[in-house]
Image 1 (tube, one colour):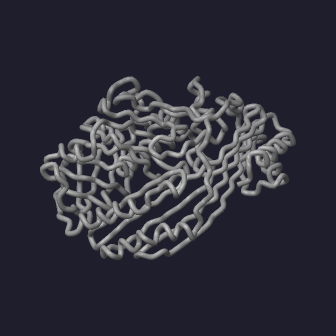
Image 2 (cartoon, helix red, strand yellow):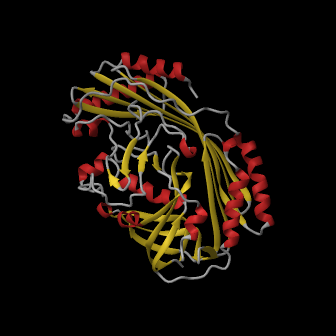
Image 3 (cartoon, rainbow, N blue to C red):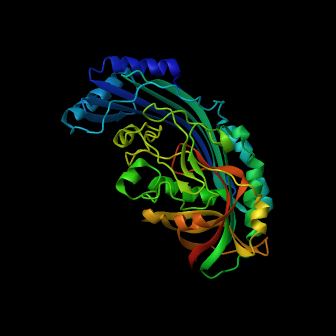
Length: 449
């Protein structure tokens, strides 16, 4: 970690020497340690340091952008020079109203000393021993990341935050049976390693000798990991201003109209520490992240904005410019999604199902089939179980599903009180916070071999 004073001083110095109408410098640093395991053994340990600095320069309404991984004073000034050269030949940007001005962000997460490879290995060793004793093969990863982010611009923005995030993801397997469990928190010490290992192994043992079920409609209890997978795709295809502008979001034409179950409320809430989520105080433009209610009791309300989309819409930015290195679409991103909890226990959700399925998680999901209908397809994975008479019975061989999430979420029959932070595989933002969800008549279209 570079530190607040040293980093912001360097950015300020480069901005003063920039010589452009407006300059914005955004820095993102990551110190990441990861230990991987497979076949009941530690197989890899790596420590990675990553830095990205982005310079954006405005010459009137012409914008130019350049990036570097060298944050020496000369390199930062050169990055600004390259961005200015690009701006000089760029077309005018009619939506540009200047870079954001200063605002006080929320406080970020706490920083703790990283566990390091030896302590990560020590925390995994008892889990591996337990899996061997149960004749199961364990795979997965244990990772910890220290984040340092800073933004400074010629309009007076000067923000800095450091935070930590850790995750443990495990898959226990035995032939056709597998079980997945995960946890995430601000640091590894807050994760119950033994509990995650036991949950993965319990699922694998319970799934031995899976039965085959024909495709069709089944009531399903979706565990938080499967709810999170669907949310990731909704966030990528429907919750940003760009999706609304393009007409591809399922929110288009439905703002203010109840189209989902009254039980469902979805918010994007970067500052919240609820459920194990690590707070994110500001976006890549230095704008404080705001809580945005996207779905309120089944009614679409709003989308998320960065400064450019906010200018086009005549509203304020919600603080959702995408993180550096994750801005492939160049648009605002919903990255801190929460589903508000319900009032039932997991046992009550399962007990209300006469015949259906308990789903641990999904994979190979494709959310681009028909985004205006939120039509998706995917497979179940690592723990699919038959519910019969309100009891979890045998494991079930994996099934393919094809389902309009818009339709499915209109048939929510219950949500759990307990929520869990689920690590997102694609984003350094960390996790989505979700309850378990009971949905009637989920459509399964094929069997997985």
